[in-house]
Length: 298
Image (cartoon, rainbow, N blue to C red; front, side, top):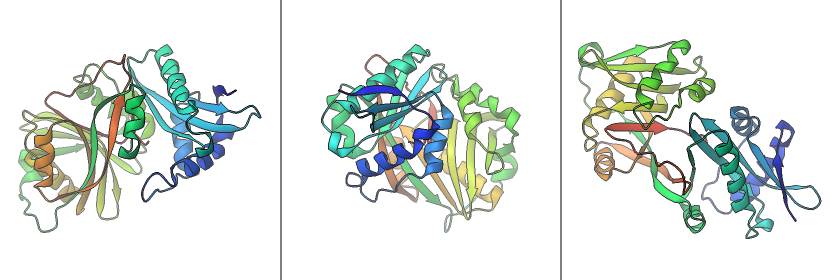
């Protein structure tokens, strides 16, 4: 009754309208995705858009996929409400999983809103953690005057040097994000910095500068303990001071409750959160002695 096929850029408009109809009444304060958002998802993997079509060859559902080394990522995905509870969403995820596995992905994952968590749990996907989105403001907080000169050193890097991210990502079970991250980043709008402490590299960070705030797109920090936000706070203060900004918007992909409690106790405000899922047969990614943050764009 339904067929599944690879979409093209001419199908992007239909995915926008389906996404709008599917999520308008599900997600509180839903912000409709724009053409540029869907085009960005398509460009990440032009052969990764999968469509569900009815007997009239009309598109009734879709899923975007992308590949980051051995990690396959799914989303956004949506099915028209009038076609709900017919197994289309489950089949789209299966098609996406098969496509990514054929390309060598060892881990298949996605993120979704808390509203949809039970749906995916019933489909035997494994919830592996929560991504929290925070904002942190240095206004009214004391900043050490020496942070940018000795304890924490920020070194801006060029686009050709973005592969240095591999040094950190490869510590995380060999998952290589760097190639795909490079294609996503426009350094005319974003900054890539390495973080040195006591002359030793301790992290990499990618972020956009917007008005008075810093929007962190990707962050990997190597630390000894994950029970204190103080280390991250000092880095954020240093970056704000370096670029003359007041606010940092960031996410944390972690299951360590101690770190999250510390974040909340250090002038951070929760802006939202999403649930991360991985496939049953996927290699589960765990982060040891790392703070990991990445905006998947889903």
